[in-house]
Every structure is written in C-alpha cells, then in structure tokens.
Amino acid sequence: MSEFRTLRLRCATLCLALSLGLAGQAGAQTATVSRVTSPVIVATPGQMTQGSLAGTQLDGSLSTYTTSTERYWLASAWRHSGGIVHTLHRGGLDAPYGQFVWQKEMCNRTPANYCGNGTGTAFTQVGHTDVTNLWFVSLYQPSAEGNELLAFVHEENVAGSGGPGNREGRTRIGLAWSSDYGNTWNYLGRIVSAYGDPQPHNIQGAPYLIKDGYFHVYYVDSLRGAVPQCPASEPSTPGCIGMAVARASVAEVIASARAGQLNAGLWKKYDGNGFTQNGLGGLWQPLSIWGITHTQAVRSSYDGKFYMPLTAMTWKANGDPNDTTRINSSVKLYESTDAVNWNPSPAFVVADEPAHSLKPDAGYQYCTIADRNGAVNAEAGQSFYLYCMKDPTYMASNFGIYRWEVNLGASVDAYRQSADFASTQGQVWRYLRGEGAGLSPMSWAGSYWVGSEEWARIYSDAMHPATTQMPALQWIAPKAGTVRIEGTLRDADVNCGDGVNASVAHNGTEIFSADIANADTVGRSIAQDRSVAAGDSLFFIVAPKGDNFCDTSRWDPSVRYH
Image (cartoon, rainbow, N blue to C red; front, side, top):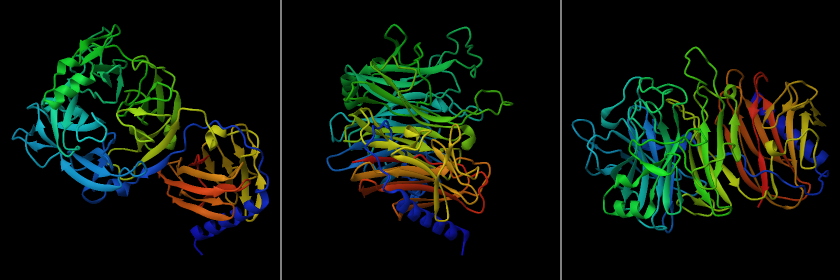
C-alpha cells in the first residue's frame, strides 16, 4: 500500500475517532470577532492559461462590469514570449475566469512599433503617436448595465523609452472609452505623469474613488529634482517616491470621453493645499500610506468610508545588492473619510506572510474589489469581495487568484482560526493531536499548541505534523444551521521538505482532501456549504508524506453561518 494511501486511511480513522469522542462537548454560542474570511482560490493556473492564454500570466488587476444578465472580467496579461495581450471572460463572483469570451492583441503596430488605429485588437483607436504598452487597471460604468465604459489605463515605455535596466521607461495613467460593452477601445490619452517625468519610474495605479462628484485616482509620483534630498540624477534614492492622488469632475470627464476627447487639463494633483497642480507633470504631496498600488478601491455605503488595499511582495528590503533581507508579503486594507487623508494604520490586515515562507519576489499583487451584492463603480455595501493574485513571479507557472470576503459591520456567527486563536481549549475551537485511533488535547507552548511529539504543532495560521502524530484542529458547531467552510492550504517552508497530505472531515465523513507539494505556496482550497447540528464537529488535519521535515503548512480555515 502506498504511503499516500496509508496516510489517507490514518486521517479517516482519526476523524472517526474524533467525532465519536468529542462531538458532544459543544458549549453555548460565543461572540465572534472574525470580519475577514479565509482565502479561497477562485482562479487556478489551468483556468488562467486555458487555450490561447497558454504561456501568459495576469499582469494587472482584473476589472469587472455587468450587463443586464451577465458579469464580465477584463484582464491584461503578459505573454512570456513578449508583449501584452488583453482578455475578456464571463463569470460570476465565484468564477472570474468562468467562460472565455475573447483574447486580443493590444493594438495594431506602426512601422516604428507604436500603437496605431485599426481593427481586430483591444485598442482600435489610439490618441497619441508614441504609445507602446497599455494595461487595463479599473473600469467605470456611466450607467448601470449600459454599453458605455470608461477605463483607467496604465501606460509604460512612452515614446519608446525603457530597455535593459530601465524596464518601464517613462510611464503614465491614461483613459480609454468603449461604447460596445468593452469589446473595442479608444485610448483617449494621458491624464497623469510623474513630476519631472523620470525614468525608470513605475507610476503603478490606478485605483479610483468618487467623492463629491470627482474621480480621485491614485498612483506613484516622484520628488526627484523637486527637493534637495532627491536629486534628479539619482533615480533610486530611497524616499523620493510616494503615493499621490489626482482628481477631475466625473461629469466633465464622461462628457469629454463620449465626444472622443480627453481634456487632460481637467486633472489636478493634490499638493497639500488643494487640487491645484497639473495632472501631467505637476508637483504633489505624498499621502500617508504606502504599498503597491496595482489595486482598486471602494467606498462603502454602510459606513461612508473609503477603503484601499495595498500589497507588498517579498522584494529586497533596500537597494543594496549585498543585503539579502526581504520583506513580508501582505495585503493591508486602509481607510479614509475624505479620500485624501488616510489612516496610516490599516483597518484590516488581510494577509501578512513572512518572506522565509514564500519564494523570492513573490506573494500578493494585482487586487480587485467587487461588491457582494452587485454594486459597481468603486461602490460597495457592508460586505465586499477582495481578489488578489498570489505569486505573480517572473515567468511563473504556479499562481492563482485568492478571494476574501470583508465585512465592515459587526461579526456575527463567523469564526476563523487566526482571529479566534487562544491559549486555552475553547468551546468552539479545540487543538488536538491524534495517532491511530487515539485522541488527546495538545499543550500550550507559549505561542502555539504542541503534541507529545515536539513537531506536532498548531499555530495561529499554520500546522506542522510530527512523525506519528497529526495536528487536528477541531471546530464544534455552537448551533444548528448551514455553514460555509473556507480556507486554502499551502506550503509555508519552501526551502525543504516533501509536502503534506491533508483532510477536512465533518464528524466521521471526509469532505475534502489535498496533496500539497513542497514549495506549493498557492495550494488547494476548501469552499463548501454544510448543514450542521449543534455539537457537530469539523476537523482540519495535516499529515506528513515520506517524512515530516520542513512540513510547516499555512492553513487558517474559517467557518461562518449563512
């Protein structure tokens, strides 16, 4: 019998023992604190590279819009052999890559390799003669379910700039217009550029919000040449770039776009005294938050606040080539009451994973926000979905899109391992070790739970199996109802090990299993609804394969009642 099958049988036997031994120990319902669900994978590498998308990877935030009957997802992808392609998919909030609609080249090329007018491409009209590369980053629908769309566009390599050591060259934020449900686009032109137009400079962007009838668009600007500590001749000086915001009247922008015009003069940067500086090249004042701005933003009608997720990848901590220190990868959700002044402390830390548990230059980027109930145009209610790409590394083959649900209101009947993690055995969560058909509570070890074998451990968001003991996280239903079980199991020790096997069981019935390879930091997800009676148990179990060396596995399940 194979080692994999042996472990699966051990897992099933242990689950049965657990259900018979502890199912009756449920206590009264407890107050909940979890307001962000565990992530689930809603797009796999296979879905994201299906058919003609083979050899590509997502290279920007997904942009979503709705018609009277369907939801669509517009994406920009980088082709490993070179160039940017654009795709459209049809699918619900659970399946952004549900049904392939089309893939198109960016534009028709002129003899000088710039974008020109023509048919059969994503951009059929181009408002400048020196456009090289364009990405869709966010959308606005002037009328609900209408055929008109305004796109905010990230532009690189302006006028042929860039090259080795200067990949992005000069960059811009621009606008594009479609009057046929996003099937073809007119690139109207550029609305924002960095002060001094330095290169290389990645303007990133462009999440937008609407406040008082104005678009507020966020991006990365530069102080090079503007202040003494940021000389124009030293483009990599730390602290000389930052997040900035520019705005323009929604009504005037849409009126101009409908007429096929740009009117770049509408856009003004915030400089600390107001929106007074030109969007193209004007001075600016840094905002109080920082992170990767390849993302989107939202205003909540529930509390009237503005929210923006910013990410970090496991990049080197500074520009010193001899310093190998890398930062954590994170997704942090910041809030503001006026779309200009942002609280520098995140309202939600959606994800924060140590660099040593991930691959170099990996983690989270390209985040999208969609209202759970269908609102569009950077608007949401009490709850919304946050989507981010996991591991968009250079020439990657294993990546995916994670989705979390964020609840801005009080937590009701929602449980999550990391949010509820405690130093005592609880009435809802219990921290157990199992071997064969036996079961015993673990012991608290100061910051984690441990079995009688040292490496059988349960952390706040991870587990590690021992040689013969398996960590078993038990959730006990405080009441009857239908629960949603979510979570993504992935490797958290990429430098060694042979992976793990895992199971989820409802009482004695296995409802999910996964075989996770070493260095699989994307993983496998459970996303299931189950009817439970009061006192029913769910068990989350991790088992070793050939050995248990380096088997730390990130698993932070959530369970919530419908």
